[in-house]
Amino acid sequence: MMEPERLIAAIVLAAGKGTRMNSQRHKVLHEIGGKPMIEHLLAEVDRLGASRTVVVVGEAREQVEARLAGRVQFAVQDRQLGTGHAVMQAERALQGFAGDVLVMYGDVPFVRAETMMAMLKRLHADDAPAAVVLGFKPWDAGHYGRVLTDGDRIVKMVEFKDASEEERACPLCNSGLMAVRSDILFTLLGNVGNDNAQGEFYLPDVVNVAIAADVPTAVVVTSDPDEVAGINSRAELAEAEERFQQGRRAKAMAQGATLVAPETVFFSHDTVLGSDVLVEPNVVFGPGVTVADNVRIRAFSHLEGATLAEGVEIGPYARLRPGAVLEAGAKIGNFVEVKNATLGAGAKANHLTYLGDATVGAGANIGAGTITCNYDGYFKHRTVIGEGAFIGSNSALIAPVSIGRDAIVGAGSAVSRDVADGELRMVRAEQLVKPGWADRFHDAMKKKKEAGK
Image 1 (cartoon, one colour):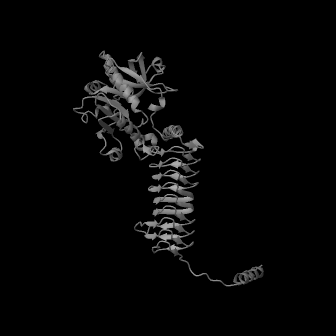
Image 2: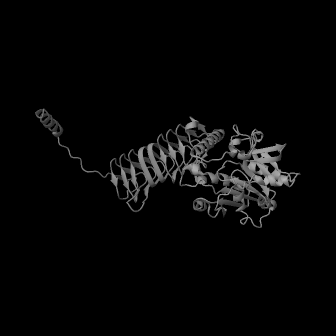
Image 3: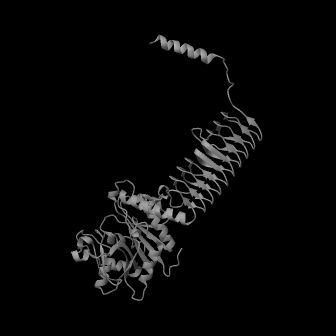
């Protein structure tokens, strides 16, 4: 968390319909790296040290309110009359607040706390600007509003639809983000009109109101246009996801992980990798994964909600689901699924196995095709396998059941009662042997086939 000199409040606009997403889900709740886009922004607001956050909601407000309940204040914009009108709806929520106000957008998720702080510092420079706008210079200025300046002092703000050809030639664009002192924000907004092409109350017009009153305003320019990229469609969401993944891949490698084919590895927002971790191609990290040092994750594995201790190896084609805990040196092989289960140090499950709701002791060996039958149709039950136990291939362990220390379960067994320490348990039908029966069967069937021709 940073140490702001003054109290900070954030107003986050999230009242738009998001029609271009063509989704029943609110736009700002679509995920990047497994986390809703608005929460990426709010995490940076928290890191900045904001004391109050107001989210302005409108369309599908109940979705946003349910997701962020208890963490932010809400203000409602019932009618979509522009960004200036949206900010006005936060006035009551900020009544009595004295400090600096940042205005941001829930669909612009990648703004860094450092950039926010740069805006606030400029707000308190010697010339005391009424407002500070975050500007950027995209490769294609397109239909963005323009910021006309003299040095870093703003001369005029203009929306693209209202701009002249000369103004449209200006390369400096308005991100929409703004820092304003709380004591003048709503006074400025009260003087904003809607005499424009859209008939809306534009937030950038607070700058023009200040300029008209001969009060200075300023711009801070981000060096990374992607930082202020908005997300309005599925295609833009995919582009944002790719930018996020590129950043996380670079960070993982810089911190000592080896990604054999980085472009095929996908991270979640909270993935933690230790040093000297080797990640083979086509690996997906869902939320909640922590990986210690010297772990090998082989190709085509999927991890979510899992914790891997030092020296673990998994895959290829392994699936770790929430609650999977692999202690030091444990090994999960191909086509093994682990859910809500702990494998002790050095335990192995190398092939074609499901371990759900289980505790596997250190050094235990789980044979191919083993299943912990944890669900009876109504409730989940737990399987406990002792240290050094050996579970033979194609065994079904019918929970609740315990397998003792150093016990052996013979291949093909269906175990429904506890097995004591050091015990051998085999649960098989007696083999029936009929010498010559197969030869006689084949002869009879061949004769029938010939007779039918």
